[in-house]
Length: 523
Image 1 (spheres, rainbow, N blue to C red):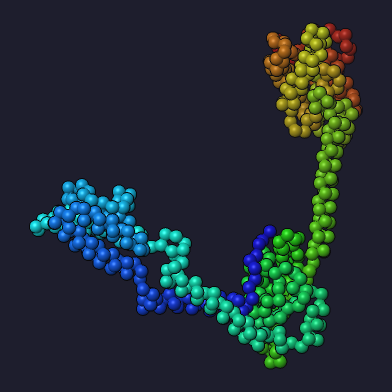
Image 2 (tube, rainbow, N blue to C red):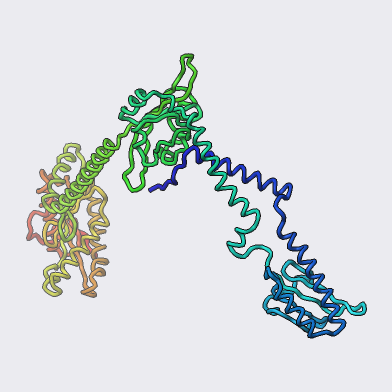
């Protein structure tokens, strides 16, 4: 939620601006004319003079070798420093040895860079008989204040701290009284104001610069910060209105620029700790008798309840759409379960016949071919008896995977029951069907057993029977029966082979060696 700073009255804002201007002028004048003495420069001169006097006095005592008097003098200087600016004194010979020191000199003394004295660390050379003898080292406190109290006591800061509150109070009292005479709302009769406040929509009148000249109670109720001190503020710069719209140009800015009524815009006004308010904002130009634009009137229509109602309806529609999609998905799942074999995912018998019978009729009318392949896993009962039904199911799934990978998108695969499968090939001739059956037989022989991890070295083969519309079948069932008869012939002929139905396959007991059926096998 957006947070807003407390609003200041026009008198307070003007007073702040004036006192800021006065303080800025004082600082500029001080920089130009040096009205406030430079404390640093004063301290530099004082410390230079003090250091010179101390050095001269100590130099005379050193020459007379009055060491006790020297120590007493140094301690006396530190003790009599009322401002406590002297931290330590020391006499250092040119060989670097400290001869006499007072105060915690080792703590406070920091040798200045390049041997040049600073405001806090002063070196005064001592000469004896024209030769350099040593230095007087003096440690001072820092010139700049080190505490808040010290800063507040500096002349410039003290001056500013006195001028700011006193000046602000004086300017504020004066401007508040002055603005009472400049308030444009004071010229509006009470009956006009009452009629203005009776409007249910928020209304505000602004001049050509965008300043608020008048507004009613409904506008005041849009936001807690819409207080009675908004007269004179720029409407575009009111914090709780700024950023409430997604468009870069507000309606009143458009009206001011184009001198015509602006299109309505939706504003979302955020309120801290409360729900946001949705308003439709419109702006119309205000013209005088000569047609000259004097400002514009901005209206705010509260549509929060309508917006919430629309939002609830949208959520309800979204929920309905989600439910519809879920129902469709469940219907698809149910259709899949109703038309597919649960173990292999192949079409079940009912779905298979429902799909193939229309194809049979269509291809028959168009004089196009369609072939059927019946497949059966060889010795499947032995697999179940030897390894169990779990391995048997794995064998069926492995064979199904091989059959599926070899088929085209329009081919139909059905698990007829147990280990028997039926493949319908729309548009395929019997020769292409026989080629596919032979490919499937070879793949099953070489690949199906590899997918059975629980029964190593298991050899799996399948037998196939093929028929086509050229056989003269009058229905899907008859076409499947012919392919099934060819499959029976493959099994009777030694299994692991593919047989194409022909008229000579007229009896299940026919001797395979005497049959004219087309049979393919690994030999």
